[in-house]
Length: 237
Image 1: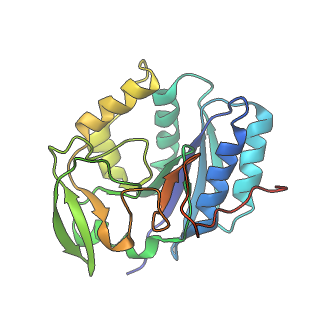
Image 2: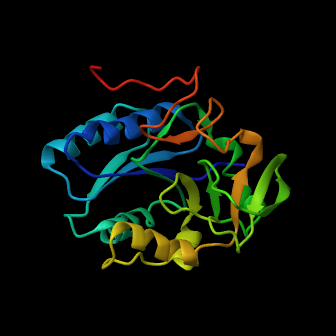
């Protein structure tokens, strides 16, 4: 199949002594993502300084893609920043790799093998790519020769809204809807997680492990990486 346009959307915010985290998230994600179709890069910024946004854009532009952009939430809140970004992105693509700067991608991720699942099964709306929280339940399904855990809608952690994931535009519009703009970060995330529970997969055959091990894809920043994990360095490091 001809792969559709995909947008890598990386959420970040300037923070004292933590700007390296945002740049590391951008660099590690873009250095390790593999995709044969048209790929755009978007930085969802919460309202950082002009200097920080410039650094993010320079880094995003240094990787091969079909274009890059940035949105500015102007410090109006976590939900408002996310809504603003998606208003722009939904006009450009139907599939999104959502990454927050709490995570880094520590090994190559081939999206070519995952994206077809959205077209093979129209009920699939989200593919989770980070460690799976427990307890979680689900049924093993085979889609396009890959095994996935189809997460039970009653699982407490069916979707963890700040963890890296592939999502369709329909999933974002119909299940998540607009993100609350009057809630703090944790409550905003919890509000969306309670709504978005159907059609969520976890790829068993990509060795997305349940801990930050050498077989993990995305791991929380600042965690303990297993021996053998190679994390790209920052420019000038």
